[in-house]
Image 1 (cartoon, rainbow, N blue to C red):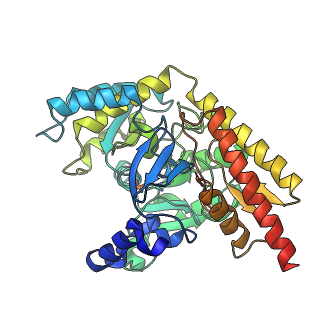
Image 2 (cartoon, rainbow, N blue to C red):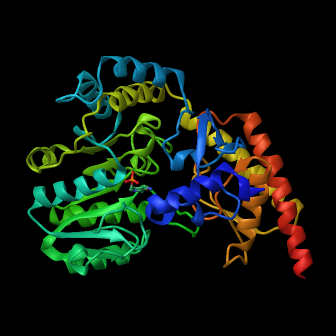
Image 3 (cartoon, rainbow, N blue to C red):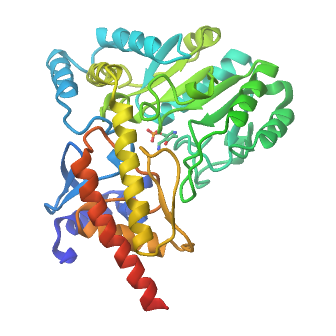
Length: 411
Ligand code: PMP
């Protein structure tokens, strides 16, 4: 059946003209057998693949789909701007409007600057931190993802050790290891990179402890280095003013992307006053960085978010999903772990080093029209309502039954 699918024929054509058929983390060969590579359309929290199968989606484009595909306010703002102009000789009014909104919304932000992708934003933060301090060393958590360029790529293919010459690594949530790395950097410390929370691939998620967050802040303050918060994945889903606001710890720089324009390509760096001059002096730019349509979409997205209720909705739906899956797992006698914020779910199975259980769980759910991921954190959107969570729980129940019966067969 799959052999004659449009997806299969597109993969074959792609293999001839695109190296490996697809690049990076969205390559379908990183997913269980049966997942589609190509999609035809999207609406709300649903996707249709090129063969016409529909999915209730729990990846949300790996983050960007925050309010639902084709959110009417965001679409209206984007269409209005598209009719006026998108890629021009400079930005539109929307850039100033969006910067004003971010400065007004984000706790630490005294200014904002725009890019396209999360990698642009994290790399810009690093450059600004070095420019503002005149120093070289950066601390980053071992295993954390900050983007797909040589200084931070998770692969070392095509990367030289010189690309990472001034990066020192610490363990997330381990204040002692962070302090040790800071000590090693000494008075050459430019910045400390921290993720909003630990969301590394294939392991339980971890919220930052207050002790760790304070230690990261203190390590920076001790030598005048910049605390850089990577909000690319978690931004706008945990807390609109910033993911570390509830900890009482403010960064000096933060990198944003994914959800900030509800799927339109946009990234942002926000920063504090003492780095304004450095941010104005570094040379950062891109042909598409001042595109007006994504900025108009960003203004509309922030407008919706600032009216409130979205984060609370994501939390309520995430809690319903988590509790429902826990209850179903208990019914089927399956031991699994759900970790991290409920609105960014991750389900890992006990005794599943090869991810066989996770794979079977996801494949069974997929066959019932629910798109989960076995190893990467998932995402909820505002378009996921009670009915959609119930639909997902019905599929999850069948998928857990499949895992339970596979275990019995094996035993
Ligand atoms: N930082 C984090 C925490 C991310 O999750 C990502 C993307 N997964 C990035 C940076 C890089 O963003 P992009 O893929 O848009 O370059």
